[in-house]
Length: 427
Image 1 (cartoon, rainbow, N blue to C red):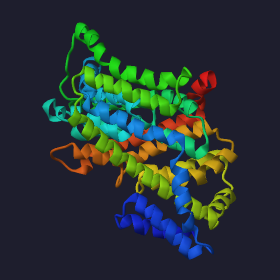
Image 2: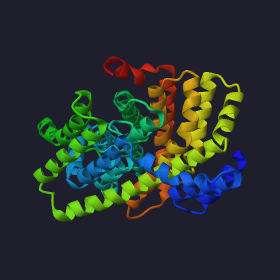
Image 3: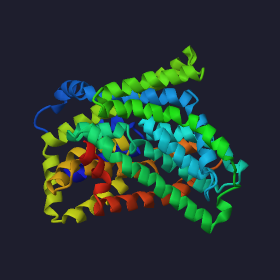
Image 4: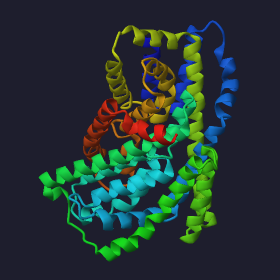
């Protein structure tokens, strides 16, 4: 049964069927092959029950927030400020890429939006200032992944819904690892550019007066972060209401920058509806597939198999990391989360892993999937912004950052307080 399911899934994905269609079709096929009753009759109820969760309303709100900020001119101003503050470090603008991604991540909740926004501003500067192009591209693809680790995060909301975990605690848990990962990225880039100075491009300079004046351009994204996350921890809003407040604040910014127009809002709403429809279709199809595999006993079979391996707590963690690293090379991140977490999470919780801590580990593993070939979404986003060159350049530049993510997971395993200190202190 397990082998048949895997073969069918691989065939459907290899046939280039959209992810939602592949998951839904797999559920229907398993229903026909293994179920004694027509489980497909429950599809209507599953579609409704999986779509009506109030928390899921925050997903289109965060997508809308990212779309508005993308077109409001926030990224250009923010990036200019980061250039003035970080361009003196070995690696120059590559640190500005990572820093700008970290700040924008605190407003958008989306890795793809983060990579696309910062990449649009940064890419024209690669050849102009003589940077090593693959590494520069890698900072954009990997920096973009910070969008789902630094709160707010759409993927954290999905994890919370699937595991009945506190979103405010997950958000708190993501702050230190997210900022720590950004710092690790910067340190790695600086080391590369010290060893190979020609990779770091031509140094840019700025006076202290210019740096101080540029701080005003860092205020808007940080203000959005305080509106969204601050309102949650102040007890003024739920995560869904906080996302809506962020949209209102972003509209105010767009108006202040004179970017708000009917044409802009038409484009923003179209892209938001398109992305939301894709996400919700994947969620519905994955919920139906999970229902089918539970009903035919596949979930129990797989859980018993994993438990029967007799692995220790940390051996299981290593196995999970390897599993997600391999799966992330072939599966889209959202569908990967929805189809695997209901199976993997109970096993890990049963071994004594904290749900909040494990949530952060899962998000880092999902980050890796965004920059591992052949289907790493951020790789394609960055490549789509280029006017020349191949995808191999982006892949080559991104792989060193995967090692930094694995190193962060190792640090979290040894020092779980990196993720749990803030939730325990303030949650």
